[in-house]
Image (cartoon, rainbow, N blue to C red; front, side):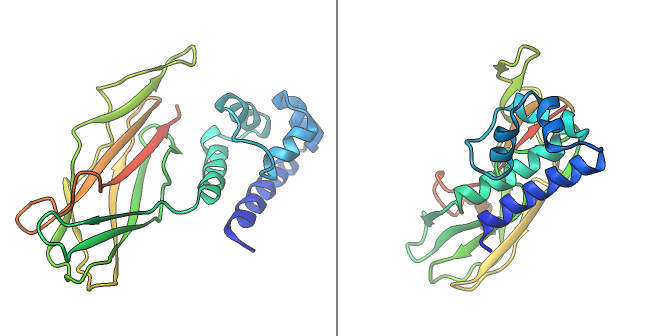
Length: 226
């Protein structure tokens, strides 16, 4: 079973199991959520485009679960459809030093989180050059990057007063020989209000210099759902 099939199976399994737990048929869940039975099946089988936030919110209410629980299933499925993000950069200081983005191992972009939730973002990068990495760090490169706040009428407004909190401004990047993968994690705490918020990190050397051009960075982007 490939990743996409697995993601669809997990979503369908979750919705059908939860319907049984609350004593509802699929038709009952669809009616509660204001959906047709046929559309609900297409939704949970991955046979339709990404639904709107309000649709998922109504479905979560029908299943009597917190919206963030259901949203995570759809985020996982969307990430599987999109496939891995790729990117390669060469050092600004040494043409033999190069890095490639390998994977978001946790928290795909726009993953939903609860207000104040603590979570760990983990990335994997690969040394695709011929220079061994030693004493490198991942350094926070943003002050407070916030995409938007969702207002009561559903519209979005820019925010500058919320951000992802961390205990560290830097974390050690594991040493990596040419060809090796380096896995690095940062612990975050979400703000306490509904918003989409991001944090950007860059690889620096032992002297604190950025190793790669500005277009290569690691990011975490989450949507806080109050």
